[in-house]
Length: 83
Image (tube, rainbow, N blue to C red; front, side, top):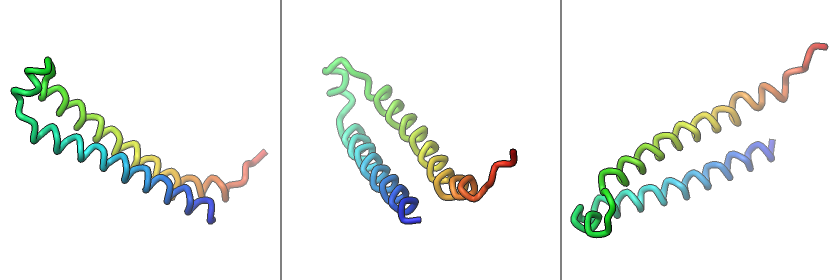
């Protein structure tokens, strides 16, 4: 049970760090004028869209991973295969 709790703590810490990086990047992109992106040969819309899309995919993956660890994994440990 301690191993299970450590895995969950690790996943939550990792997710927190990852979300922090996304939020930092998002805030910086929003605050940076479009003209600077254009001057650098970049598209503000493409970067914002890509970041938001990847954040949504990541959140879905996190939810599925936590569900597996909290709900499915304990059920698998308690299940006995029938031969």
